[in-house]
Length: 448
Image (cartoon, rainbow, N blue to C red; front, side, top):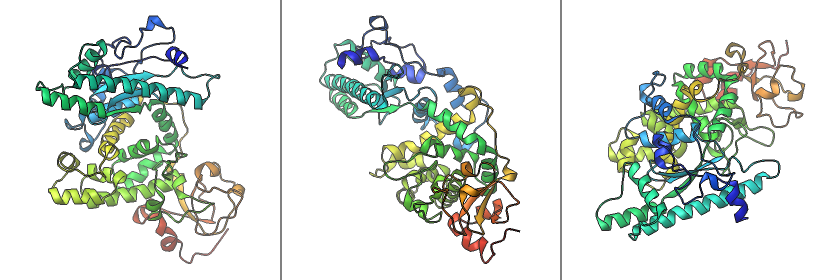
C-alpha cells in the first residue's frame, strides 16, 4: 500500500506560494521526492494567479459594497478562504495552521488518485492516509523545533513558511519553545472547493433574476446570497450529519420557526426559493437585533445569544472587536471563520466571470412569471401540467401523493386558479409559516 501511495501522489506548495504566489519548493518542502523521481508526482498548481487574487480582494472593479470590503484585520482569513474557493479543487488538501490562517504548510494534489480502477471509498482512504502522514510529519518537525533542533532540510523549509507568514518565531528561547509547541497543536487540513463553487453558480443561475427581485423587496444586500454557497455550495441536496438540509442548511428546530412543519411527504427546506424567503426573514431579524451585518451574518451560523451577550458586555459594535476581546467555547473555529468565508465568497461571486470559465448559456426563469403560491385545493404533483413543476418543487417528496389545501409551492402558471399567487410584498411581510393563516383565509377551492 505504501509503495502504491508513493506513486499516486504529489505535493507541496509553501505558504508563500498559497498566499503570495512565490515559486514552489519543487516537492522538497516535506522531504518528498522530486518530480523526476516518480512519473506520477507533480506540483499542486493554483487555478488562478496570485496577482488576480490580490486584485479581486482589493475589489479593483468596485463590484462589492464598502460594508463587505476586506479590511486589514480580515485580510489573512479572507485570503485563505478565497484560495480554498477559487484556487484549489476537491482534489487538493491544504495543510495549515487553524489559528493563523496565514500559515499554510503545503497543498497536497490527489488529482491523479482517480479513475475507473479506484472507487470513491478507496480514494477517500488514500487521501485520509496520506494527509494524516503529512500532518504528522509537519507536527514532528514543529516538535523538534520546539526542542531546538533545526538541522533538517524539512525544518528549514518549515521555518521559511513561518517567516513568510508575517509572524515568525520569537527570538526569546522560552517564548520560541511555546510558539512551536502551539503550532504543533494547531495543524489542520482543508479540502479545496473551487469545482463545487463553480457547480453552485450554475445551480443558482436559473433563479438569479428572481433572487434579485426578492432581495430588493426585502431591502437586503444581494451579497447575502453568498451564505448558501458557504453553507452548501448552493447544492439543494446537501444534508449534514447533524440534520441541516438544503442550500441554506436550515436545522430542523430553526426551520420550524419559519416554515410549516415537515413530515415524510414534505420538507420546505428542500425548496430553494421558499427556504430563501425564510432565510431572508431570519437575516433581517438578526440585523435588527445585532445592528451590523458582520454580527448578523455570523449569527446565522452561531445564533444571536452569545453575540448579543458579547456586544452588551464589551460595548462592542462589530465582530472584529468581539473576536479580539471575547472568549467563549461557542465561538469556535467555524464561527470565527464564518464571516471571513462569507466575505471571500462575496468577492468570488462578484468576480465569477474573471475566476471561472465563461458561464454556460443557462436558461433563467422570468421573475415576473415565477410565483410563490398557496394551494386553494388539494392536488397531486405528478398530475400537474405546468412546465418544470417537479424541478421547481423538490420539497414535495412524494409526487404521487395527494397534498392538502394550504401547501406552499412554487408555480409558473398564473392561470391556475387552484393556487393563490403571492406578491413579493406579501412574501416579505410575513414568514412562510404564517402565509396560510394570513393570506389563504376562507378562500374556497376554485378551478374556474
